[in-house]
Length: 411
Picture 1 (spheres, rainbow, N blue to C red):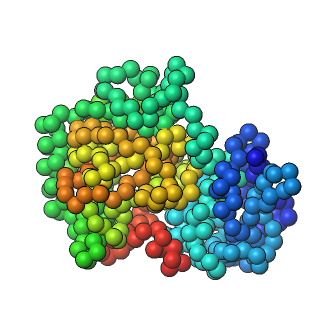
Picture 2: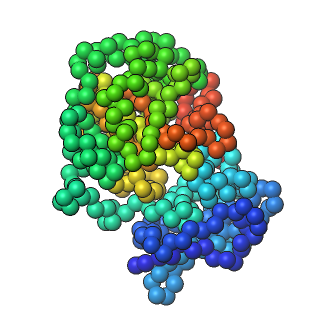
Picture 3: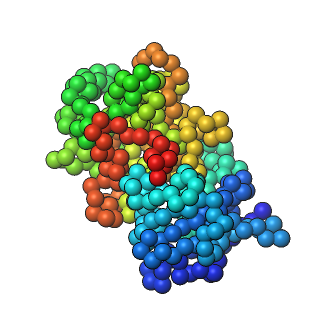
């Protein structure tokens, strides 16, 4: 089956006569995966300022082709959302995201479920930007010799850099064994414990989760660069050398005063509320893809990466695509690859590669803990002048960050 992503011209006015996002030319883009296209139910949109209403839907034509079309009115739409023109145009320009609008309270459900709008986002990115939707049948991972590539491969720090760069370019991530010594890991663990002891719920510098019995548990410290040992990692030539493998020049995103650019996370078992566990996502999932990507994250492992410990999983070859929302432990979701990392190992991944953090399968530790260093292209930034797109997740007095599905249910 082939598809075309051209929007119907039936209601161009719904996007505004000036400055509206234009559909991309999709002549060379892969079609929407058939199962995903068939799952898209009509989506109605109401622009707040003007009251304009239109519906996006998939149209199947007799030849077997399909296309995404737009028509006036919302009568036949299962889900109808209301948002301002700037936000809708931001979706079209890949500056805003469905999740970012929901967490920021900038979109409302006029009918149906806001998660349907989230489900539509990959199709909207496809039609406006030409970005394909992830299809495992179209992913062909090859090494530099053209042979099948092992997506679970781990490198050593002194391995061939061209080979590492090709692996990163192909899969979207790298795993490097034994980058830090046991003594360095011990020093970083001591610093981590000081940060853990200093964190307070609602301090706007940490994320917290809650277990079924109501106990609050610390999941992340966002400004771990307050600790000199962690701040110094950004200037470590071994780690900075990984950022130099990217095809686009990447710089540390650390702010020397705010101690940004270094995050510390702990996986906690039994978390039922908050963002202790993460669905399949991209790091620009709160918005800003067109204004800041590519970005990259380097993870320094202080604990093991295993299913028992609460692993980090990557979806090989996904970093140039989109993926519909899926919980990490949903049996219908992709499985991905979990590098068998140990303390002292590091991973380096593009922010756009789909990755997930399912809950630990064991109550017993040690559970995964990681230091995250962020990198970004030098000319990137927040298109509205904000500090960070993820700041939309902060604000709760108890430091809890609710699951997207919970927030969407309030919309």
